[in-house]
Length: 132
Image (cartoon, rainbow, N blue to C red; front, side, top):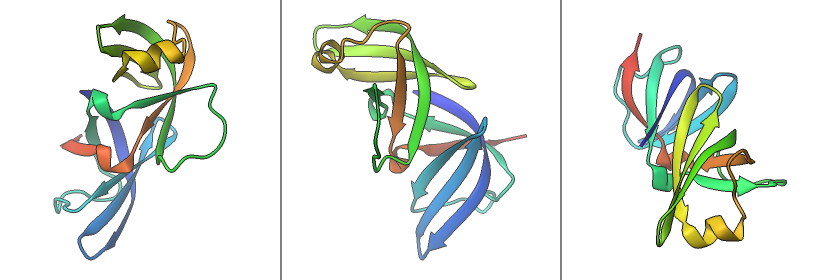
């Protein structure tokens, strides 16, 4: 699981659907949620989490995607298993872990030191806690 410290900068809602926007070291992140605690307000610092299996990786990325969250990253380590590959990524302010298929890792010719983009859908981020 990867965690990110961020600040809430915007909250949009219609009925039970909430889109929460965060500032993460100058990068914009978004989260989609059906429930929000009353303490979740603009200006509050929070700890976000996402599962390693929810972080996709793009190499030599150009163009547009529907993924709300795109973080420029550098590959710190790669561990190939029989079916899956675990990749540690350095991004601004955090180390992320991504798990992708070994086939994808080999097809993309991923190597330590590569610049990549970590992609996370808005519904794959959640708030773990409010921090001071």
